[in-house]
Length: 187
Image (cartoon, rainbow, N blue to C red):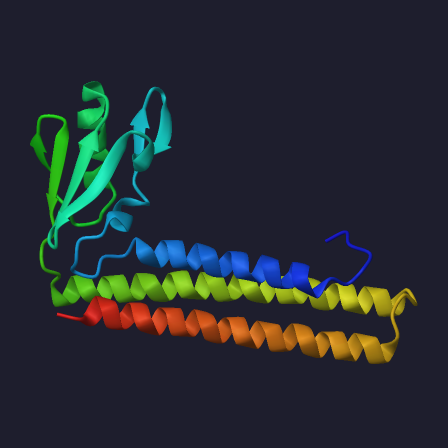
């Protein structure tokens, strides 16, 4: 961090970015209901490069336990099918021309537990990111005080603000995780 001035809104923005990433990761975890977000992590190998699924097909949810993937280019249907199968989402596409239908099977208890563990892993990664931003902010405060650009009182006051923000966002991460666990465990 090459900043020369303390900027709390910038620190909060960087911390919130890790929470947004967590929300995207959690939205991709299955809960037993069909959701177009379930296919967000799928990357398809087409035209010599990896592309997100939503750039080669449209995804819709025609009913509660079915996802429909309309592939735009007929030559990419097999690549999309392969990408979905290899994404380890527990989905087996059924080909119908340029449309892939993905029936959403009920989750087994073991699969639910796997998803809960994965959600915990995502949440811990997000917590670490928030703490890293906190550490960088605290290091900057120490440097500013050491260089005489900030008084000791300002250092302590700003340190308290950074810690308060960190605690608030860690609590938000924990709430997101708890809600996702409830969603995954619902039968």
